[in-house]
Amino acid sequence: MLSVGFRALFRREVLRFVRRPKNTFMPPAITNVLYFAVFGLILGGRIDEIAGFPYILFIVPGLIVLGAISNAFENASFSIFHGRWNEYIHETLTSPLSYAEMVGAYVAASAVRGLIVGVIIAAVGRLFVPISIEHGLFLVATMVVITALFAGLGIIGGLVARDFDDLTVMNQFILRPLVFFGAVFYSLETFEQAWQIQLSLVNPMVYMVDSVRYGLLGHSDMQLVAPAAYAEFAPYASLGVLTLLTVVVVALDVYLFKIGYGLTD
Image (cartoon, rainbow, N blue to C red; front, side, top):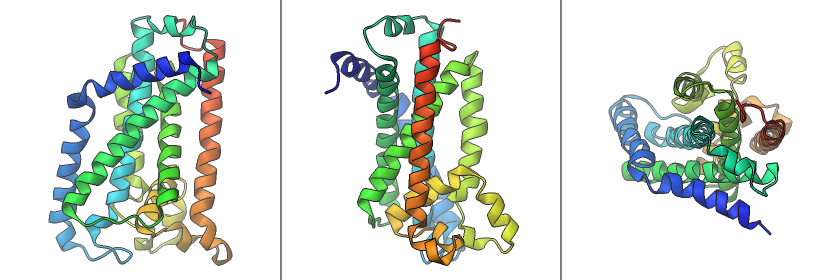
């Protein structure tokens, strides 16, 4: 049973972005119309199919990941930092909520924003190309895990940031480039050298994009690069690792709240 305090904090965080759709939902919708128009229609008409899929369809999962995790991260980091900046986060800290409940409410609300944006991007993509879901439960589980993961990372970002410019740097110059190099616009099959594939596998975003692509399209690059004996289970292994990483990050968030890191500066 969720406590009244948890529900109240969660509701406040959700209402904070729901009440400002022009700031939270319209930008990713408009941005992805441009992505699909430029990369999908214009460039896609000049690019052969990738992994047996039209190019515009192949990039849909990556754009969903980009929008979902960026918004989950941004929501959590801004909420925490803004609360520190204006010193109203102390009201949360002095409430009868456990540290786990506080972190859980921030993570859950930010994950909800990421999931909503992911659905919006999928709807935009549906305007350009037919989309069918191959592994629905796997897709939902993956989206919940990765948005929760980046909501947890957003909390850390909000605690570490010293000004609003730090938040911009984290999201625009660290997170987004990693996603763009996470096989959003290309498949690992396109690499001819083994070292290129190995280098790509260092980027954790590759596994997130690949997992969503598997859930949506039924295609996984991990099945191609994994040993043949384990290829069938590669997407599930990726999801398991991402789930474990999410648990670790959220546990770290709870610890940072407990010691008051960045909260009492």
